[in-house]
Amino acid sequence: MVKLQLKGYIPAVTTTFNKDGSIDMDGWITLLNWLHQEEMHGFAISGSTGEWFSMSLDERKLLFENCGKHFARKLQLIEGCYAMTIKESVWLAGVAAQNGFDAILITVPPYLRPNDREALHFFTEINKYVNIPIIIYNWPIGVGNDLSTSVLKEISRLDKVVAIKNSTPDLKKFIADLEALKDDLLVFGAMPSPLGMGLMKFIGGEGTMGAAGVLGKIYKNFYGAFWSNDYASASKFAAIDNDLMSTFFKNYEGIYGHSTATFKAFFNERGLPGGYVRSPMLDLEDSAKVHIRNFIKKHNLPKIN
Image 1: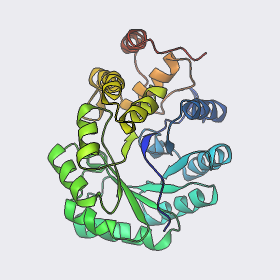
Image 2: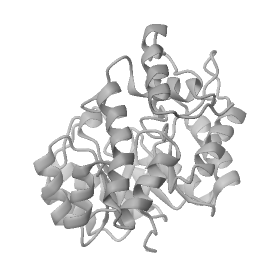
Image 3: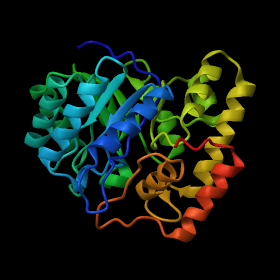
């Protein structure tokens, strides 16, 4: 399997919905164009932040087709192939391959809480039936199971598995996973922070895959400075992201509302088509949006339109 040329900041892109819940495709492409202009290193679409769970397979296919049409071969495209069955994940992987995506992102099905043997079987079956590089997603908060270091190592030996996005909240385990996997896989999970820089510099890892890209070029500037060994500049950019995460999020969850609703409100306040969340999630209340406007003013983030 071809090794991915993947590193840096890859946002987990939100999906732009109209107030009635329909997909605002023009708005979504406008948002993606802005993220591309801000020099994101790739896109991860139809993930948790993209509200995959609220969309039909046909709707997700429509997203993949439009994203591929506009951005294939311009930057690395990753498709979230999350589903409740192996058959559905494999079908989504086929759509990704047909539309110029570079890899698929896969987590074990939510609610199932598989043991290690079952998790290995799940990824082995996916590996058997797809023809596109696989990125493991270890997402214990979302699926209820933090995959063990030993089973992640076994999964890493599958021939199409090339990377991991590791969102374990356990720092000691993240470091153990990183040390075990860094020679075999591209590892994502470090944040733009002094800790993230230390992990990537002294142990390994390729970067960040997640959030939504609301700070735009700040992420690109962080990694540009870090890769140039300009740690003072990198730390300044990291401080803005740290302020964002500590003000609006705790343990991967939003403080003033759902994390996805928070990201969408950020885009909307910046003049971009963030749109609305789909029910049963709720958009942020007006009182919460005041904090977003204060943050934007504090860090002089430009209004786009």
